Image (tube, rainbow, N blue to C red; front, side, top):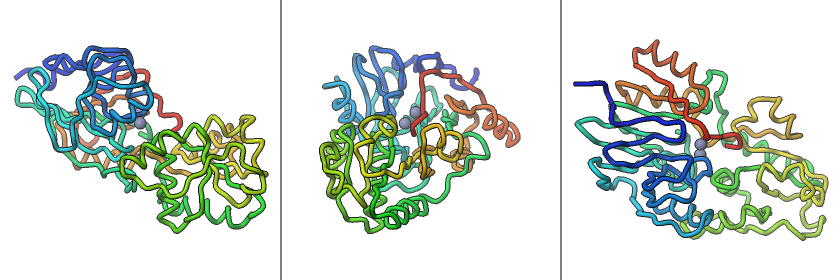
Length: 332
Ligand SMILES: [Zn+2]
Ligand SMILES: [Zn+2]
């Protein structure tokens, strides 16, 4: 027996699976790509052929135009070259998957981005035991422990009801976070129309088409100020401080992101109401997941790798940093 996983080769622009002649989440166009989920830093346009879940392909169609894609459902496998490739839920956004690779008697699981806490817009993470677990580490420091999502959403609603002459403008990533926040609000009884920035329109419509009911959404653009008083307005983070937001009635600026744990980041964006809602595993979820997956080796793709690598060493799991570039989870 040689070195474990020698058929998997990390390059700066993606993970190359040699016996499949395929790349996972490559940052440049490749003949064959296996895509974990629809976020722009993982799913890019221009590949020859794409294997992904039907939902991820639909998201890519919206963003890049029609893809030459082969849909693979959760729990299904497809043979690519000499590798059996399976897709298993990652709990990150709608359609997000861990990619399970079986070859030469070894099983490698590439997590992509993932989280462990419930998300009403997507299937929950499934633990898949394997030899090598390739994980992200976006929030791979013990200081990152995300609070309960429900209490963050309650803070938003309290603030909204306390200041009926204002609106709450929430910055939320257009794919996943925005729809999750809407569902969390609906789940807590907020049935009123939610106003959205035009940049969220197509993805919200797609979520609806794919069976995620978001309730009544209205475009915020062109709506008179008075109508927006006491309302929630969702916009991509980039729109929080731009001209667009000046037309809102004295907005309370909020942002839903795991990074809101860091006060300085909230200040940078002039965020008055930071909401710590993340689509990534926090430190406890990362370490819990590694315990449950119980791999022989952990390879870390991106994020704060050092602390997680150290944790693995203490727990007698061989760990390695891949230092992949191009994955930016700034807004997640
Ligand atoms: Zn992502
Ligand atoms: Zn990512």
